[in-house]
Amino acid sequence: MNARTAAQVKKISSATHSLELLEVEITNCKACARLTKWCAQVAIEKKRAYIEEEYWGKPVPGFGATSPRVVLLGLAPGAHGANRTGRVFTGDRSGDFLFASMHRVGLANQPTSERRGDGLELIETRILTAVRCAPPGNKPTPVEQRNCEPWAARELALVADSARVYVAFGSFAWSALWSILAEPWGLGRRPPFRHGGRFDHSRGTLLASYHPSQQNTFTGTLTEGMLDEVLGLARTLAKSEKGLSSR
Image (cartoon, rainbow, N blue to C red):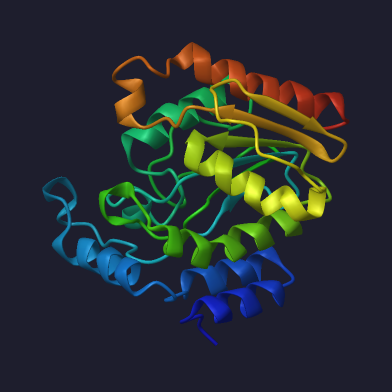
């Protein structure tokens, strides 16, 4: 049964008990008509640089370890990045910046992420987005965000036993992460987003970073050093709780 309404997203996600099955359900979701149409349209029209490629053109599931110590949360797939390659943060400048940093701090086995099957492995880390379809202008509506939230909530629930550090990229992801964890963690008022922000809880630590978008990286709002510091802290915190193996 493919999810075609917000109610079906809630029902199907809550009844899915493995990451493998969740990936299938997410990929087949059509609950947001505007986003479904947009992803398919981009996959047909394509970008000139990728005109010979076959686009993914549908919701993008999470990627990485099935029992992660570190969880990274972004906003949504890029129209010509993950919506093209079918793997989150893969095939665009944001991903180039992110995975290079992950490799430098020991969260990925290689510094590049070009396509599925390129040999990339995340080291006890999983990465996903709050919204699973590429939105026009990279701006999902509040309704689309609410429709999609159960997918991320279920994915986080399925890795909750191992996850100890959560990193949100940007204010949108920070808000989404807090919303998802508020009930199970008994959280109160959400702290304002700021780069380098940290919230410690008995069930884990939440960290905040600027999103590695071109708008931030090209202007120097987010530098390599700034991102390395946040991701390096995530790795250190995970290791301190019998987490990541040393490299």
